[in-house]
Image (tube, rainbow, N blue to C red; front, side):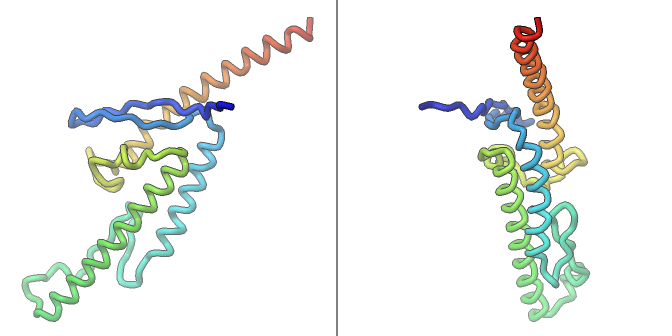
Length: 167
């Protein structure tokens, strides 16, 4: 038995000329549900990894503590403590990024993160907008286009079959 899961190729062209493809089923009615659930799980996981030492911002980045601003006036001991804190901040940022990757892959039922974010982090600011927002803004009309077409096609098929019984 062979079953089709309806995954379609969506070509992506990056502004550096690189081209790639992501695959997912835009007609999957659970896509929207998984995206909404992913958003909730992302928030929950990010809250679980928040540290008392850091303020995790809405964009997934970490607020730079005030004590990092006067680096040149620090003692060696303060430098070491600052380096340790910076390493912790980097770990939190990495964990946050991985959560985003995991949840987007789950929502789209495909490994899209390795393609979409191969040139920059989801939180990279490009043209005044987070890269993850650019992706979601670009893919949403594609999903809507396919969903509308699928709905129209189904209505035609249903109408055709129902007309046999209503005449």
